[in-house]
Image (cartoon, rainbow, N blue to C red):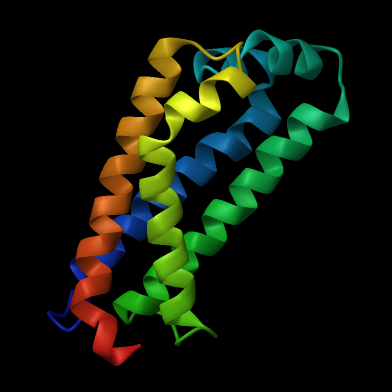
Length: 143
């Protein structure tokens, strides 16, 4: 890989892609994977019953994370520059970091999710957000 590519944004894209793949995998493996990933029993039961909502949410989040990965690759110099790249990458970085620290406020809205789910996913979001932040700082003037 050329040194002209921003390694932090490439890593951020890989991490967002991995998260997207896990969400898309829920469409295939259904309730057991929803449970394993800590989505909560309500979502797992919806998936078992074939309710559209569980798969819709998994698909929508997967598409969103895939889009975020594309923006990170664009910022890294591996894809053509996407529209509003600076704004989008700033928002993506901010959302990851906000999700990492806002979990105490989010927990009451999702009482089925375990404490382990909140701690693990918040830690993951913190790492991805910090990786994006490091990459964004390096390419800010080029966007």
